[in-house]
Length: 239
Image (cartoon, rainbow, N blue to C red; front, side, top):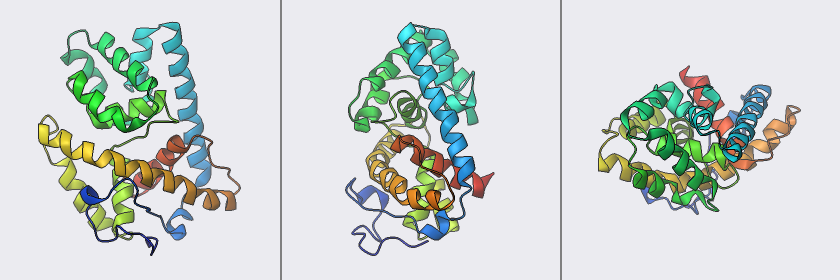
C-alpha cells in the first residue's frame, strides 16, 4: 500500500495531522476487497438507519435505544455489540434509556459531525464513549457524521504506515491500552475524530473505481459506505 506522494502529512503523527490531509489507499489493497460483501453490509446498515429513523420519529424510545446500542441487532452498533457495552450503558446509568435517546436526538440534528465528541463528553454516560457514540451518530445521521472506532482507526493507520500491518496493529494497541474511563483517553480519541473525517471521505472516493471494476456501485451515503469498507478490511485481517 502506498500513500499519495502529494500527501503533505507523510511521516507525521495522527495527532499532528489536520482534517485537511489527503490520505489515499493503494488500489492494490482495495482490489482484494470482496465488494459484494461490502455492498451487502452497506445495505444492512442502510436498513438499520431507516429503522432507527422510523423508531425515532414514532417515539418508540425503548426499541430505538436498544437498536442504537446494538442490543437488538448487532448491525445497529458494532462498537457496542462487540464488547457487550449496550447492556452496560443501560445498567450503569440512571435514566439511561431517556438519556441515550436524548443524545442521539442531538446527533440527528447535527450538520457537522465534529461536535460528536463534545456531545459524548457532555452526556456523561458510562460506557458510552466516542467509539459507541460516533457509530450511533453515523447510524442516525450518516450524511454528516462518521464512525471513529477501532476499525476505522486501524484502516487509517494501515494507510499511514504504507500497508504495514504490524505497525498499524502496534500503533492501534497504544490507543486501545489507555483506560477508557480516563480524561486522557477521551482527549486522545477526540483528537482522532477530525482526521478520520477526511480520511473516510477519501477512502470513499478511492474505493469507487475498485468497486466498479467488480461490478459494484458504491453506496450513495459516503460515510456509511466508507465505514463498510473499513469494516471489511479490518475483519479480513483480524477475524
